Amino acid sequence: MTEQYIARRMERIAPFYVMDLLAKAKQLEAAGRSVVHMEVGQPDFAAPAPVAAAGKAAIDAGKTGYTPATGIPELRQAIADHYRDRFGLAIDSHRIIVTPGSSGGLQLLMGVLINPGQEVLMTDPGYPCNKNFVEFVSGVPVSVPVGPETDYQLTAEMVRQAWTERTRAVLVASPANPTGTVLSRDALREIYQVVRERGGVLIVDEIYQGLIYELEAFTALDVADDIFVLNSFSKYFGMTGWRLGWIVAPPFFVDPIDCLAQNIFLSCSAPAQYAALRAFSDDCLAIFEQRRQEFRRRRDFLLPALQEIGFSFPAVPQGAFYLYADCSSLTDDSFRLAYDLLEKEGVAVTPGKDFGTNRAAQHIRFAYTTDVERMNDGVERIRRYFR
Image (cartoon, rainbow, N blue to C red; front, top):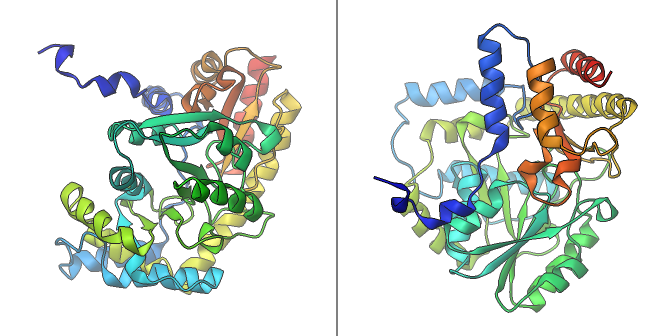
C-alpha cells in the first residue's frame, strides 16, 4: 500500500516534536549520557501512595470490568463534592462525565459539538493537540495570535474580530500551556458574553487549575453554568499514566456525550477510577498542596536563573509548571537550539514550534517538573552552551 490510502486530514496533523525530543533524550540516556529533563509536561511526582493503594485494592477486589461510560457514580459524586468544597458550587453529579484523560474529553466535545467545516477559535501559542482534535471531526481550527500584552490569552475583542458565520466554539485554557498564564474572572466573563451573543459555545481547559500560585483559584463554572469545562487527574493529582479526566457539561449535552463515549471508549479503566476516588481524601489533598508549593518554589528559582542567561519573560506565569521564554536575544531558531542543547549539553526543552506559528522560532518552553538541584545543573549546562 502507498500514501494514497492515508486520510488527507493527516497532512494537516503535525507531529508532537517534544515526543521526538523525549525519544532522543532516552536514547542518549541509554547510551550513558546524563540528561536534565525540562521538556515534557509530566510531574515528577508519582500518584500518592494512598491513591496507588486504592488502585491495587480495586484490582484485588475484582473491580476490573466495564463501568458506565460516564464513570462510576462514586467518582462523579466525588468530583461534584470537590466543586462544592473548593468553589462553593452545587454541581449535579449527572453533569460530570469521567473521560480517558482530558484529551479523551476534548475528543468527545469536538464530536458532539462540531460539524464538518465549523470553526473553533483558540490561541497561538497553545497546546498543539487541541487543533488536531478539531481536525479529527473535520472541523476547522482557527489559531488567533496572542502575545504578552494579553498574557498570551484571548480577549473578548479578539474573539469578536475572529468570529465568522462558520465559528461554532471558542477554546481557552487557564492556566495555559505553554505559557502558564491565567484568565481573570472578568476577562473570561467578557469572552463568554461575546460567544453567547453569537450563539456559540465556550470550552474552558482547566487541567492545571489546581496549580495556581499568587492568584485566587476559580472555575469557569463560577462565571456561567453553560460553559463546558475540561479537567484532568494528570497534572495537579499526578496521575498521568492512569489516563483519567472529566468534563462538566450543561445538562442537555450529557446524554449525547454519554452516547459517543459508549461508542468510542466504552468506559475508562475501572481500577484507575477507584484510585482517583481516593485522591479527594484529606490526606491526599494535603500532599497535593505541598506539591503545589514545591512547583511554585521551582518556578521562583528557574525564572530568574534563565533571565540571567538572556531569556526574557514578558508575561510571568501564574500557574501550571511551564516557563515560555523569549529567546530572541540568544537565537533566531529555537527549534535548532532545542536540539543543540540536548545533543551538546544534555538538556531537554521544547521548541516554540510545538505550540503554533506565532513567533515560534523566538520562543522555547521550560517545564519545571524536576527538582531544583537538577534544574540548577541544567541551568549551568545552558550557561556553558552560550559561553
